[in-house]
Length: 471
Image (cartoon, rainbow, N blue to C red):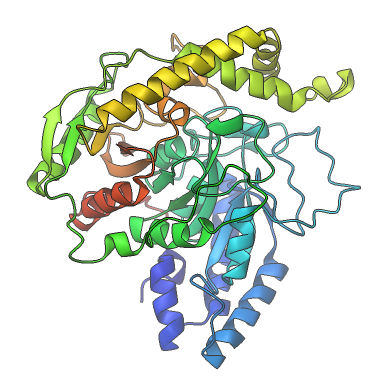
């Protein structure tokens, strides 16, 4: 048998059902794996071995009775330390959050749905402070390294989750994405991640970054992501902006005979209209993925959506949100913040209400443009990122002309502005052995279609070579 920690969630459930494997065995294997990887990559901010084994034993008893609690009963899961997890402090990577004196007695909606379905919570994963940037290091947790080379960044802000999943420290992880934060680390770490349509996965408490922020699955393959989406997209009254339940299950979208990508109208934009300079190795790997879509029956046209880079509007919304996060802090706590975070908060606090509303206007126009674009094309395909993972512990690559993380993530944040579903699919390795991701973007509410297309690429073997040697 493959090492237990390398089994997917779908495989674990199959083995639990047959009696071949117990949730206790799987949880022990994952906890052992965490012990192995944590000193080198620093993926976890907190591990609850005792609580996880207790949950696993309860799950094992349910399986013995033939009465599993739900779709992921007994599956080890990690949660990014931005989301509330009952019984564990949520520090959000900040020394300004004091764990003492708080009850920590509530689950975020996605966590609550997982708990109802019997998931085993092994721990919380690292994040930059308040999830503010596209790499993962913080004043509380330190630096999170890449599974392929720990001296390089795992990406962010869900970098701990991506590293954990890539290295077999639990097949399922919950991340958040306000400007690319599940897709960036997925691309750098060689895993799959989906930013769902805004509201598809309920979120509470509401993010200070407003309707830019999404919750999404981070997994090793699409089948696990669809399984996780069927759990976490369940309704929760605490999120007033949640969407109505989807018309069908996400796992159903992957069923044989579902059509794959045959006949889909696919627009391939290698640089989003020339706004991004893409590393040649990245461009070549993404081109191969696009060619594979065509081989599988998609109708591919090289064309971009035609919008200008909305980075300034994104900055206005993002930096304002960051300023709102730290607004209650006193001078003493201000000095505890990540210096880069202090910089963008100061900039965010300088914007006027009219500046903010002007950014909203840009956002609405972009959403309108993408709505029109998707009336002609089912999917937009781009690189997830124009580069591979760079050195850990810095916001931008050394020698870069960029000063902020958005400079090297031009393909991700536009689709937070438009609230569209977007996934990163591993599509190859660079000459240095670093993962490359291809991004699939669908129209709003077309989450199942994005998953279906990504699954077709997995089934065709696109991601087969993308596995860290240590996994």
